[in-house]
Amino acid sequence: MESLSREKAHADKIKDRISELNSAMAAKEVEYENIKKEHEALVIANQKFYNYATKFRELYLTVDNLNSQKERFQAELEDAKENLQEIEGVLCCKFQQCTALSKSDLHRN
Image (spheres, rainbow, N blue to C red):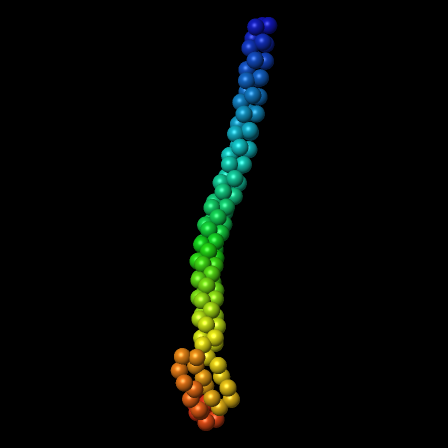
């Protein structure tokens, strides 16, 4: 009888342990599903961020190129201004003779 009592106690311990492990496994499955959903949301957010970063980089490069063009055009304008001297009614160029212009000619240009 004592032996049966010991075996029953041992079986009860094993049943309790199985029950605890099943509960732990169920909790881990719920945790896994939650983490999986978070992961999927992060994948989508990361893809959006990557797309925005790519667009930003392209836009930044475009702005940089436009600024370089602007600086080049301003330098060309300054060079042109050094070679031209405007006097009211007369347009002079260092490389050509001065040409008298009437006010109506100035307004047409």
